[in-house]
Structures are given as C-alpha cells and as structure tokens.
Image (cartoon, rainbow, N blue to C red; front, side, top):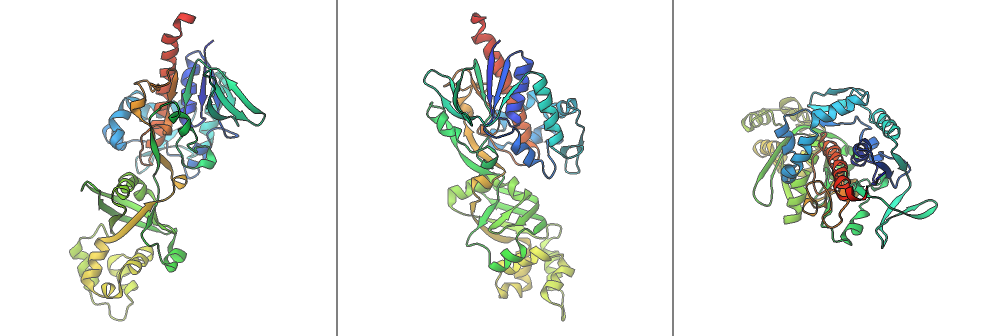
Length: 414
C-alpha cells in the first residue's frame, strides 16, 4: 500500500488526510503540537465561523489579488459543499444575521471530535509532538520527537504547516527556510487580519480608560499608495496602541501594503455615518445652554463614550469649540497609522509558498510528490469564514493531487 505523510494537523492537513484515506492509501499525519487542530479550536472560542452564505462571485472577491488563483479550489469545494460535509459529521449549521455560517452550537470542539473519530476509523495514523526538520540527503522526512529524531519515507507528502501567526499554537513559519533551501519560491510572511498602531501612540488617559472599548457603526476610508479609495462600514475597537476589530481586519491588507509603500497611512473615520454633514453641522451648532459638550453631542448627534474620547484625543480645544470644525471631524476624523501589529498577534498571515511554485494540483514544481495546502500558501482573506473555507478547499485539492500523482507516477511499480 502506498503511504502519504501529511505534515500539519489543522483544517487543511486533516482534509488532505481524509481525501487520501478515502483514496485507499495509508496516511500518517504528523503535527508538532501535543494535539491537532489547536488554532482551529482557539479560533472557535467565540463561535467558529465556518464559511459565508453570500453569492459565490462576492465570496470569491474577498480573496483580493489571488481570487482567480483560488477560484478553481473553491469551485471544486464551495461553501455549500463544505456545509454538506459538516452535516455529514452530524453537525448542524445555521446562517447568522450577517450571512456568516456557524455550527448550530457555535462550537468547534464537537466538529473536530467527530472528524478525528472518522479519520481514525479510516486508519489515519496520528503522530503528535513530531516537529518536521526537513529532508535527509536521501529524501526521507526528518522529524524530532520527545524520544529523539527519526527519518520517515513516504510515496508522497502534503505540507499543511500554516502561516506564522499564533506561534504558540504551532503556526510558527519554521518551514520557510526548509523550502527556500530547496529552491521553492516563498513570499515573505506578513500580518493579516491584524490591528494597527497609531503614530505617536495614544495618551495615558485614552489607554487606561478606553482601550478595549468599541466604536460601533463607523465608516473607515482611506486612499492607498496607488490612489485607490477603500471604504467600509462596521465596528472597530480602540486598543492600547491603536485600532483593531472586524472593520480594521477587513481592510488590513491594503492598510498594511500602503504603510509598506509610504511609511504611514491616514484613515478618515466617519463617527456618524447615518447622518449627513449638514445634519451633523446643524445638531452641533444647536445652542447647548449650560450642558457640557459631551452631553450636548450625545443628545444631538449620538456621539458618546469611546467616540467622544477619540474626538478629545485628536482635536485641539479650539476645534472642539468650533461647531463647523467639530462637525467636519465627526464626519471625517483623521487617524494616522504607523505600523501593523506584530505577526504573531495577527489572526492570520499573508505570504507563503507562491502559486507560481506549484502546478495546478498544488504540487511543488521543484519537489515532485510534495504538495502544499492551507495558510502556508500565498493568499489572504478577511475573517468571515473565508480563511477556513480556502484552507478546507486547498487541503482537499492537495489530497486529490497527491492521489493523482501516486496513480500516474507510481503505476509502473505496482
């Protein structure tokens, strides 16, 4: 029986293992951590968002510059097929008000448990605490485990080693030099779905009183280095060093790339997106009598809490006391961002094995019989189920690619 080594026990690796085991080969799955699926479980602590229900064309657009490259993978295993697969594990799903799809109980653990049970029933062998160290001179896989080091032979290999965010859960990017040494093209790993630091930092008052506070229903817009305008509405959060949250994550790729091109980026926040500038101007200019400015803005314009704190943080007293300048700031408050947060804090990473280094079945051109899947590939997407869907789809494609390789490349030895 042919043997395939899958290295990495996240969603992409587990999906590759499933496809391979269904294809009648012996699968050995190796993971450096004490158990598999650790990042998957942590991502699901607040409710695991599996995929999204929006139309396929819109869904595909979330993958930005790599949308056309990812398209064949998602067409072969689209969101509805992923949901059917989950239902086959005995896990029901539902569509949330935002269009995101979740397991009915919102938890990742039952899904992972059912999946691992099915994989073990299919004779997938799991080897945890096995850190991959590369290849030996004769092409064997080289691992370190608590008992020492060992070399393993395999007829094909699927690498699903993750990116380089949340290193404590296993995605540490240690595979990058191992592939570079073999001549594989790897784009630098960069933070994605991350927060950003503001230039010059926040005041102690804002940090201690308002870090962790949300700015609900705002619009963020900015122009990138090429002059293209990006605008999105949603919710963000003030952090100790800047801003983060779903609205920021959705724009993290162009924000990061603009900072890389021009050192900083100034975004404009509309703190009252449901009101026109004229309406805000009229409300702010309304006589406030003996009321404080905070009380006045809360009652007339709905500006309170973290929004009010941000205005006080970024405006001079003269601007706060001038109704015209204050109204313009409420509708277009400039915030200069200096850098993304460190890669290890990011939800995911961009960069990785370039698709140009792979054939259409996700096999490395430089290393026949070695396939790549998941977040270690050079693509990125916002949160909202897009990351997981592409990991599942690429794992499926890599597993099928390895099966096809074995059928053609090893046919003469059977």
